[in-house]
Length: 201
Image 1: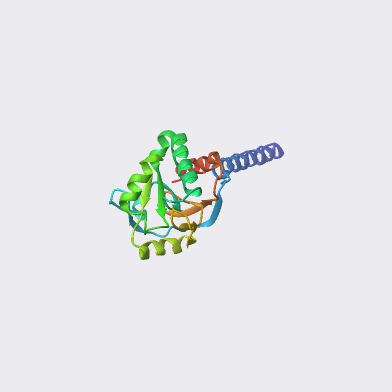
Image 2 (image 1 turned 135 degrees about the vertical axis):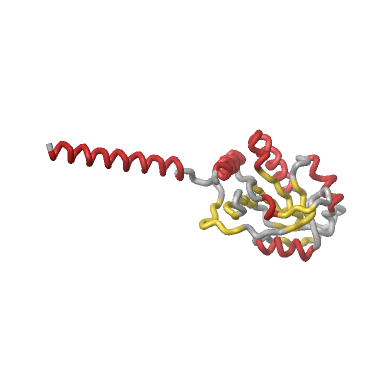
């Protein structure tokens, strides 16, 4: 009898162990598709003006997932493609998009005024936040996120171009910098990561 009860006890302990392991796997088994920052670091706060002349502070966006891209309105290729991806990601998220902020920060403050951003962004999605400010303010933001920015004379009627970092930065609901994505990252992968970030408390 003792042996029988002992076996039942061992079996029960094994069952509990398997259930706990399964719960941990289901709860923590997601693998992020973007480049994960582990451990996560608090995202550097900043305050800039949006395309409507309103103040946008990153620190006040807690509770939302924030996707940030650095670019400029005269960009001939990378920026239009990324902003189009922002629009498509937002559409594919459906109602969940209300919990996500899509942010475009200029690397060309000389030309990207509030008025210029306000005229430019509606062709993609008017809900995208276009941010600008004084060059000194922006330089601090670029530095905080490791963004490369360099003016290049093009010799064309379009004027100068700006070489810049082409990654997307993902900030979680707690205000932590969690992920980055390379240019033209598969949209479905970004959407999966956003959904996971939105599930986190």
